[in-house]
Length: 298
Image 1 (spheres, helix red, strand yellow):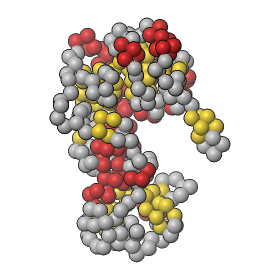
Image 2: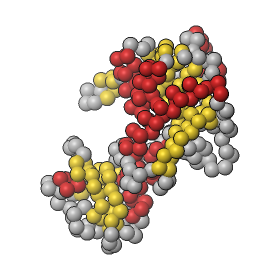
Image 3: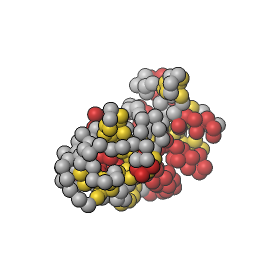
Image 4: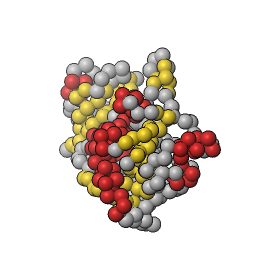
């Protein structure tokens, strides 16, 4: 098939690679380069970098609302557009342009976790499973009918980073299957019950409140890892906690119970991986060789 690919972050790259192997990717759409690093030099997105390496033409309009951009898109004559974590709203004219429309790879079991941060929210909510849906896009926010879905359990403990990578690979495999079977697939409307929205992660959610129950703190740590990273402050330094597991014992909230085991409002958690400011992530045992914990974290 002649495919237009629309995506921007790391999550989208394995999908682009899979499509480039099995189909003719005639153009890639992604977000424009953004200033990054200390020099604030413009840096292309992971998808743009990969597309250029593959020799695929790249477009990064700031909007698709204009008639000129919509005409340019339609002129590609695509059989289908595959969209995954692109970051722009697609107007109806764009949705209608490819012969088979626009297919979205969404990292949740729709209608649960429509929206921007489905992987984070699934872990933070304590979901036991998640998955990938291949959806025929419409004008709503992740409201289109579902062509294919596949479920996977969420490991305990599993971080957002780990689940992100698993779902990215799953999405790449599933979209190839969907394209191979596209004429025979039945689009199933999403259920009207069970709808939840995965709001974009706010950095204000990252500070750990040790008075909360251990299971909530645990999900916060693993769900916000690696970005933005749940944190606590020790001697004025912000320490990101990147992986944790449930631990035995109880104490006053924030009490250090030996090693990097911390009491919560109820129960306790054991920090397994953490990161100091300006340092690389490291096992908690290694971090503790250069950092003394107070009796109580606040």
